[in-house]
Structure formats: C-alpha cells, structure tokens
Amino acid sequence: MSFRFLPTDPATAVRMPAGQTVLLDPASRPSGSCIEVLDGVARVYCPCEENEWITLAFLQAGDQLCTDRLCSEGVCVEALTPLSLRSDGTPRQGDGFDVVNEWTLQLLRIRHLGSADQRLHALFGLLVRRLGRRCGSWCDLPFRLTHERIGELIGTTRVTTTRLISRIRQAQLLETPVGEAGMRLAPGLVESAPLAVA
Image (cartoon, rainbow, N blue to C red):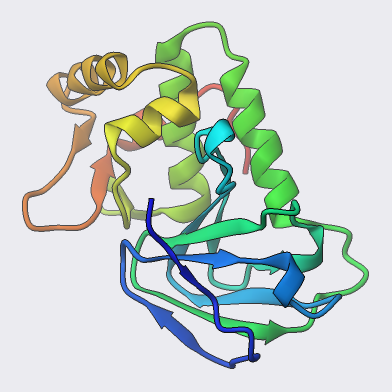
C-alpha cells in the first residue's frame, strides 16, 4: 500500500484525487489538532499490516478526525471521491460525538450479524444512509469499494463477496453504471437493511 504523508504545516485546504491516501502521523501533529473534511468522502483505516488495513470509519463533509486519538502508528485517510480537507481544524467542543467511534461501532455491529448475506445487506444500507442520497428511483452512493474491501468490512472473502453482489445485481437491486464512479442501489434494499440506523 502506498501513501504520502499529510504535510505537517497546518493548511486550510488540502486537495486529494480519488484513490490517493495520506498517512496521519500523530508524532508530527500538534496536540489537540484535527483534520476536517470540507468536501468529498474518505475512508479512515489503520496502516498496521498485521491488522490488514482494517477500516475504522468513513468521513464526509463536516466530519472531523482528532489526530491525538490515533494509535502510535497513525491512521491513513483514503480519498474515495475527490477530497478536500483542512489540517488546521479546531475540535468541536461539547457535543461528545466522535464520528470515528460511531462508524467503528456500526461496522462492528455489522460484523456480528449471523450470515454474510445479512452483513452485506446491512453494510450497503449503512453506507447509503450515511453517505448516499435518494435520486429518483435509485439511491446513489458516490463511490465504489472493491470486492476485497467489502469482504474486509463484512468479514468474508473476496470470492464470497463477489458471489453475494452478483445475486443482488441479478435481482436488479444494484447497478454499477459503466463510466461512473459510484453505484446505485434500490431503495427497498436500503430500507430493509438489518441494523437500520438514521
């Protein structure tokens, strides 16, 4: 996995193309600092190889990642769509909500569902509810994840993930239009997802 380091000097706007990853090293960040997503969608993951780059959270516009709460090896931020963030953010005080903790909890809940079918269904529901939007007769998700990444998120192999996604496609509940970066899911699939959270 290749990534670059986020510049240590605070910046009001750092732009990243989709697919680019930066490493946030807690040793080089000022205490109490955070990054804030201005636009786009990002995946936050642990860079430790022994953890197989496990996904911790997804971030979207307005979300903050406090850099002093990171493990000693830091975390990576991967741009799933073109991403703009500021590295000089001031953590919001008083609301007690931490987006990374919330995402980690939801992903952990999904991993504990009984079958891979349920876990995939719940994952798609969560991603669309939190990061997608209803657009006509479909729900749009502005990015795609590889089958290997989906397998990591639901605790199964890439082969099993591909088989499960093929079933959903055959049922005409999922489309991945050629030439587009995102995917479309049927509203009924999203609404009937296990562990539905607002």
